[in-house]
Image 1 (cartoon, one colour):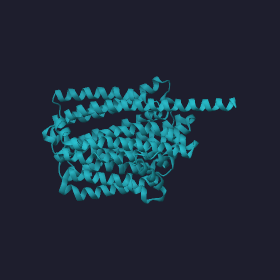
Image 2: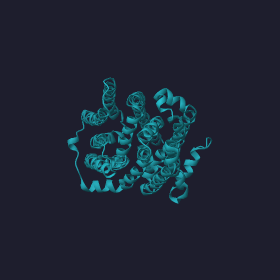
Image 3: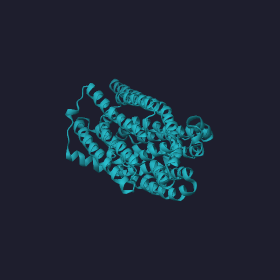
Image 4: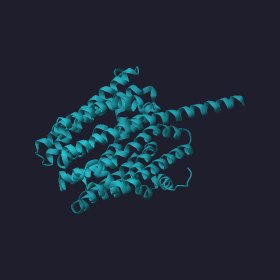
Length: 440
């Protein structure tokens, strides 16, 4: 009897210790995102006012265009790698080394494809081509994010947060200096690239300071095949997600012009700045969800349900006040030149509900090995988004793009789950997360 009590007590202590680690890890991620949100919002608005609607629109058009190729350098590996490290911690050097080289090769490929594509589209403006080349090179330095995946798997994100925030704060100060010295647009692109380079160096220093060496990392072809086989659906899903998030700005630039992109980007900046919340929570909670599946099916679904409920409520808490205050927020932050962004923000902010839902269900799709299903519904939503943009942008410009984004996000992250037998279980949990009195 005493033995059983001791085992139970030990189990409870481990559970509490794990919970404390998750809370602490989430706290660090939140601190990171809040710092970035505050500083980037203030400086970003300052940059928008300095550059003006047209140049700000051009810069965001290029950022959106380059981001379409980001799945090539991320390769959909992040969640897959974290799960493999959690399950095979003794093989971490091989997993990390293989991931690094895959991401590095992906980064090089993404730059070449981005530059080649801008020429293919018939763009011959020298400034635009330079912007694509400079901002595209950021993917090469993102290979160092492999280190961040290790810290995530150990629920120790504070170390990567410290490294990246030092780079971010330095970069923020440089941007302020560029504004004060009236620097040209191209200088802001170089500074953006410099932040990723500094982050890579910072992550390397912190990793080495923890007594671990990247020199122990090693490439393994079999591991590469295993990781890519699992992440392949996530790569295509990543393309679809980027279409969700950025094709509206690219299509606005192609169909209307840079000024409309500038107005729309002002609304999107305020709307999307909240996305750090689900990203931080899910990255911290995901390892415990994977571990729960190994122990108990009921505990596993309980944690998923609680995560969905939490993120759904947070999205409502953000969207409701933003809907009524959108005009004032845009005027105070960006000035009268961006006044047309107010109505766009009032609509686009509701995209957060479905973005939060989609991120909350991502660990379930990975744990259930249903990445291919996630890919299918995401591709459907992406195609729907393009079609709706083609129909709505010519008549309603940025307002139409916002409507297209909401409908496509709702379809992919929520409605599609109800029409597939394989995902109806998670759809039921999503519906219950909207019911305030349902207890998981």
